[in-house]
Image (tube, rainbow, N blue to C red; front, side, top):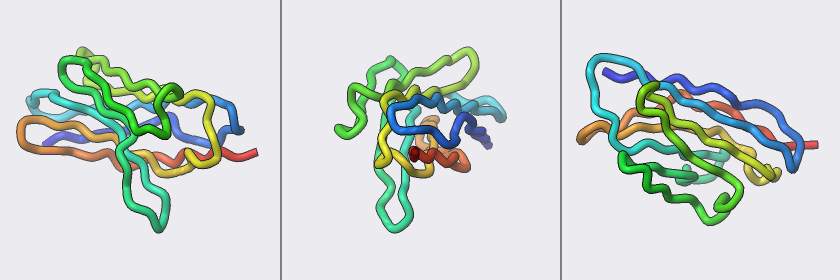
Length: 115
């Protein structure tokens, strides 16, 4: 079993920055792809950013150029650096990891962008 613990969410003004972290722990597991989704109440969850085991990245069009995903395999951690935040980025952000055929999700962290 793998557990994911997220941190770094909060309230920020438009134009500000936040850095989300997601640390994985548990019994022996292989870290394959990692990433972040987000969800606004009443809307479908959407992919924000994805990073493969080879460090290839993929971003939603709405965040490209503003968000950066990275990973530290030694720490089993994935990060999401969010810059130039906009009110429409307000959502609950969920991290995930793929290990073999399984996907594990974090509990979610709230990001609110408001003046």
